[in-house]
Image (cartoon, rainbow, N blue to C red):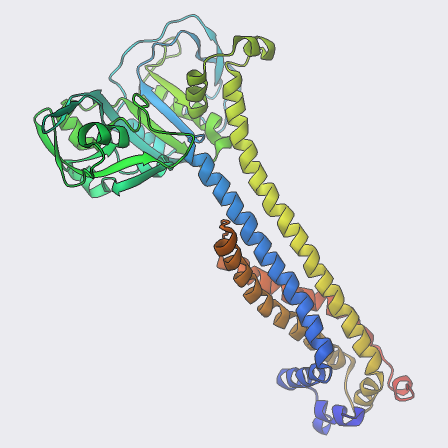
Length: 479
């Protein structure tokens, strides 16, 4: 195509270019050098595809780590009715209170300091209203109220005496390590209506039914007949069901059903999950403040409840390390610190992985943008005479600049669209072939396309400006 013919297509009758005509001419100009255009689009397609795949893998890994941390219970807090502790207890001192503390007097701060006062022993003050109050605390994800008592459970001639636990339907969302080899957990409707149903821990199921599927069978607790609707087991290899483990040797019934069986309305426990392991210590302190306020306890009265995180429970099971505690000074348990920091480190690792992969992919996008700039600068040099003819027949500098910007944007948007398709295919292939967890939201896809288009504008601006500065008389003499 001659330069004069190109100028005629751009400016028929010497009038200003419309956006539609500019786009049509930009496409024709790019098709004149098909291989060059294809390679430029390919470089940006690889950049966008790499970015999406990296974000998908990074986000998937981050979500997978978060799920495993939650499944291990590192983000859980257990509130227990009664307080028999002595030694390290929660006290108040003169200081500035945290801004979200529910304490009436902001000059009082909750502190973990030695106290020789004994605990108050057993208590019946923990209520369902307390659970509702905890559920509204920032950082709390899920709350499940509980009451329990060891009772004989009968099926036929077999009798087993586990803990009968009245729970809420949200419990499996907190105990994410749970799996159900048979049946299911009870629903919210069954909980609210106090349905006569039960879910067996795997140990209890083996004791009462052996290796048979117990779903649909009827067990007897006290004088109540309950239909078995599921069996719960552990989904973590490091958390294998054993007798007296408190989870899989129990029988779970709806909270209202347990209240009728046990003939009481106070709670024994409130299980709380936090949004992040990093929130555990802060949320635990705020829960303590909230419950003392609700129970109307003055500053000299010990708490009538106990709060422990999963780190505390794990430390208790592992035993106290007196030597380590002596070295570490004021640490109540080295295991406590280790587990808390472990959870935070795992989450931090997930974030770091996402940022690292996204940064590497962003470099690919920049390389693709540099490729667009090089191609457009070469195009300006090759089409200098064409630009001069356009300027000679009446084209303005801004119209020439618009022409080259449109070509750059067409290259980048085409590469972005193809890169999105490539990224989705690579993410799906990674999930299927390597069994890695991948997560990709449509907002990230839209952002990737927008970024690729912006790159076309940014890296195409300089070549377009160079083209707009070409003088007609100089360009007409150019060979």
